[in-house]
Image (tube, rainbow, N blue to C red; front, side, top):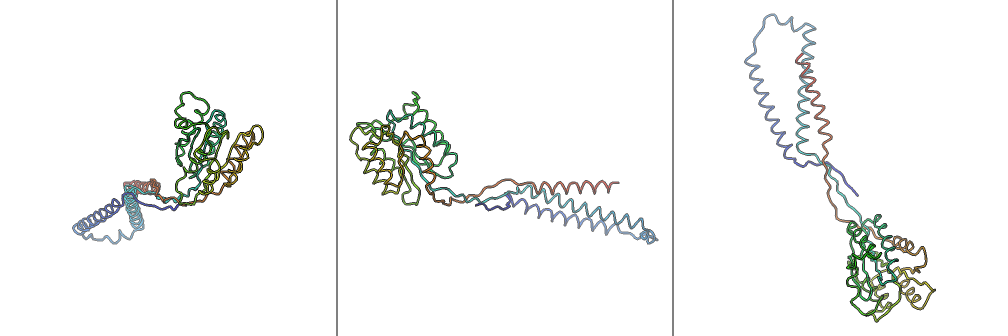
Length: 329
């Protein structure tokens, strides 16, 4: 929502200019009156002259020219004063933002790298359509690490997702991207990874749509602090929907069935990674989740708008020049 209006950056200039113009006009009028009184003299037999049609026509044209000259000078001076006061277009912007939070939660064990890179690249294209949604990224293996917390700084998000795509695609210069994910024992500790992602949402006292995009090979090797069922219960308690992406290459096994139950229990959806539409399905599901519109803080936007004073000054200048030339002739 936007409310527009006209304002002046330096209103004192206009006020002082008007006072000065009135003072000058008063002094000029007083001086002319005194000169006219001293110069007044009776001229004999002038009545016949002043009654001539040519004299009356010349006098009428003279008065018209003087009136045009005076009005044009006032218009030119007034427009110059308004221009010096810097007229501004003032717009009060009351933006609305979408209160939707999306946490990308990626298992970065060896078998997942290519899928993770594709998923991150897909979400990077999605960022272009966001208006207030926040995104965060957590990666995990034997331990979880936050790459960046929830933010709506889309330039920053794009830079981070570019880095993530390169690192997950095997760029050897970006090995530091995976720092903090090998501090435990084992690999793909999915319960710990999911619990970390679910716990990464802030503003828990506000009504917001919260989603976790959870990509894992689902091959647990080790003993997690929190198992996947407990992580699913934590997600439900916090109102977080989990959208799971699981390889399930050889058909559904017990681990796949368990993961499906966990993610669908949160209100989310489950996708097998061999499903060609899996990543698009996750993106569509997250976008379809209702996001509450909230009013952001109002802000005033100012932009110079000199069009009107420039146009009036131009008209006044033409009037002054035109009246002066005719007077001189």
